[in-house]
Length: 164
Image (cartoon, rainbow, N blue to C red; front, side, top):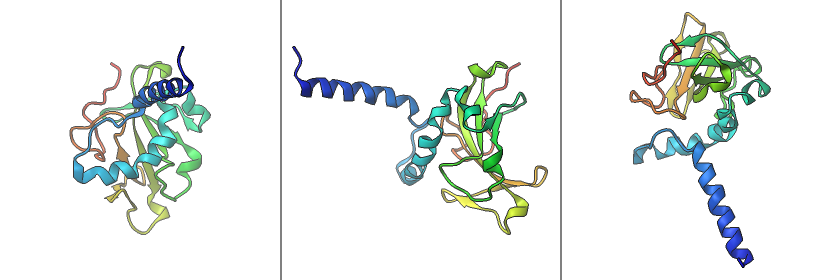
């Protein structure tokens, strides 16, 4: 028969193993460790959306248009209309996968700020947002659920594919 402390240790070990599913998509060099620490609130806020059916309930509207090397953009209109930049509140969730929404996988997040809402490009995690004049927004991507060979905060990820 197991003792209570042993049962507790086994339970903690099992819980720890399950938590690895939300681990970073790529290992960070030692000098980037601070960035990964800063991304903890982002993981905490978005990890539940790894299961795509939860995204609409969190205010993220499904889309059926896949942008090559970015994926499907699920936009939270309430967050989009707020010009504040918060690591725990990305305005967009990025998914890849099939045309069936429930089979999509979370690959990254994006923060957007309307150009009209600020005099200068915002910064987050030490990175300056990209100015997209065509869409009228500043944006910053973070490929935290699928590694990007071009970099964690690059706008495009060549490993993200759209359905044929």
